[in-house]
Amino acid sequence: MGARTHYPRILAIDLRLRRFGYAVFEGPKRLLDWGVYFFPPVVEGGTVVVTNRVGDLMRLFTPSAVVVKKADRGSAGRGAGISPILKAIQSKSSARSTPVCLIRRKDVRQAFRIFRGNSKYENAVVLTRIFPDLLWKLPPKRKFYQGEHPRMIVFDAVAVGFTYWQLNGTQVPPPE
Image 1 (cartoon, one colour):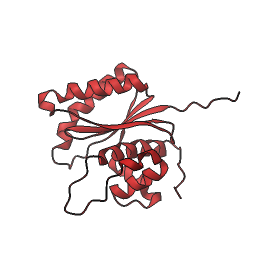
Image 2: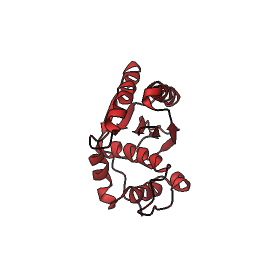
Image 3: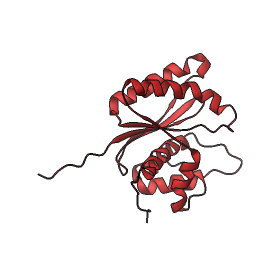
Image 4: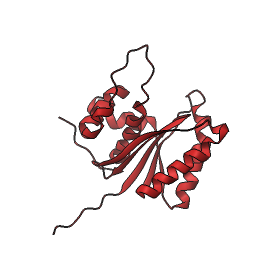
């Protein structure tokens, strides 16, 4: 019987005003779960709902770290609306002795630079090559006049987790 390699688990989260996307990784090449969770506005108790859902995910998957995409200050109201949720996630994580790592948007762009991904959609296509289970979730390429497809938040969360692994020295080879 051979020795088993233990890879740490991470919970990657991309927070938005009324929803968040999540992805659970076991090591850099294994995606365990992903999804989107919608919640009420923060003023109506959204913070409690989100932290309970994140707590459920932490109990279910027992991650070694929680990785959250840091909100841009320039986003219209995004930083202010996300800040209490992020603080609640940090307190929930510290209660479980799980570190929280913040990933900047700039880091995500840098991680996909080797794949020549210039847009979120191109990055999503790269992610479907690395994680083929996501292929059926890939929305059609949007036209310039269309809004972002609701499923793109899943790819944003996976990109956050992928960036975490890239920053921590685990390089994933480019897809064919």
